[in-house]
Every structure is written in structure tokens, then in C-alpha cells.
Amino acid sequence: MARKFIVGGNWKMNGNTASIGEIVKFLTAGNLDPNTEVVVGVPAIYLKDVRAQLPCSIGVAAQNCYKVPSGAFTGEISPAMIKDVSCDWVILGHSERRTVFGESDELIAEKVAHALDCGLRVIACIGEKLEEREAGKTEEVVFRQTKALACQIKDWSNVVLAYEPVWAIGTGKTATPEQAQDVHDALRQWLCKNVSKEVADSVRIQYGGSVTAANAKELASKPDIDGFLVGGASLKPDFVTIVNAKC
Ligand code: PEP
Image 1 (cartoon, rainbow, N blue to C red):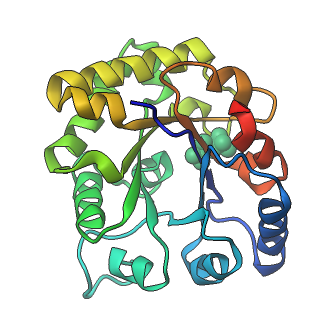
Image 2: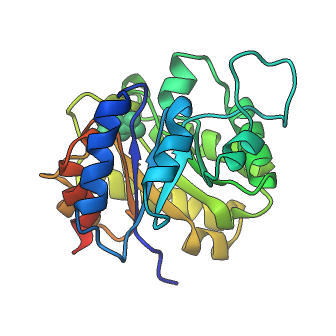
């Protein structure tokens, strides 16, 4: 089954009305490859504005949400709220949520399950830290994170996995195409054994970690890399080159 290439831009906690206007300009003017799905992860306060400004061919994602529909959870937003402002995606489990905000595998999996139940599409992030890679524990870590997700996910059709080695995020140190391909292949084998062959064949696995206009094409040539989750470079016109890496 052909997996449609999907590139996400994670703006993180960056931008303001003016700079986001500039991003919208290059996204709408930029001749994006129609064979690649594009999603931008927007700070919550700008979701509604950005959704109104971008064509519907570009998905808009929240960068987080909570695990229940409403209630006394100061500072949180719910999947229902994301849907209410006409956005269809959420990024969950980003390494910054795991490390800065202490989110556990279990909490992330519960959030993913609730977001899916509410009809959102989810980019679920996993990835090992440098010390875990150096200790030879990359597979152990990403399998543990994926297992927590798999315990909660009933239907994988609205899930995209993003493999983001933590040591490559925002550091300028990209995983080599071979390192990324090896982990994506291992993840697909894990899914085949522990979920189903159909899910293993169909789920899209993005690579994230210092993807740039210069390295995107080579990474995109690997058979199990189905797209990217891009941080820093998604704020710049270079993002268009990354989106078009398969052309
Ligand atoms: C990210 O935030 O998911 C990311 C991959 O960041 P960067 O591209 O800046 O490394």
C-alpha cells in the first residue's frame, strides 16, 4: 500500500501575528507538491487565525491537548476545542512535552486515545535520548513508547508516528538517513508483530530532528521514511523545499 508522504511543521512557542503572516504567505505562494500532505503545528492561541488563513489542503494541528473533554484543568485545551476552531490535527508526545513537562508514556497514550475518539488526527512522537542511544537502548525505548500507544489505540488510520531522536531535535545533528531508516524499519517490524501487518504497512512514520532543505532529499529517499516533522526550518521559506523533497 502506498503511503502518502506527510510533512509537518512544528512552530513550537514561536511567532506572533506578523511573523505568522509571513509563514502563511510562503505556504500559500510556495508551490507545494500536491502529492505531499502538509500540516502545521501552531501555538494554541493562533489556531483559529491560521486555520482561517490557510487553504484547506494544508492541515492545522495543535501542539498538545488534554485527555478529557472539559473541566477544571487550568491552562489545558481539549480535542473538542481544537475541533471547534475547525482544526483536525494534534501533535502529542513531543520530546519537549515529555522532558520539559514530564509527560509519561501512559499520559501521552491516554491523550492520543481521547484525541482519536474525538475525531482528531494525531502525530504521535517517540524517540530516544542521546544517553539511551549511546547505551544501545534505542529500540528498547521506542518500542516501549510505541507499546504504550498501541495499548490505547483501537484504530491506527488517523495516526502518524513521528520518530524524533531527542539528540537530533534543535541541535543541528541530524540522524543519518541509515540511522533513521533502521529505526523506522524496526518500528514497522514491531508493529507487524504486535499490532498487525496491515497497520505496519500503512502507518506513516515521519522522521524529525534537524531536517533542513539540504538533508531532506536524502532522508526522503529511504523506503520507510514517510515524511518529516520539522521544527526550526518550518518557520522559514526553506520549509517549502522540505515539503517538496520527494519531487
Ligand atoms: C521538532 O520540534 O519536532 C523538531 C524536529 O525540531 P528541529 O527540526 O528544529 O530539530
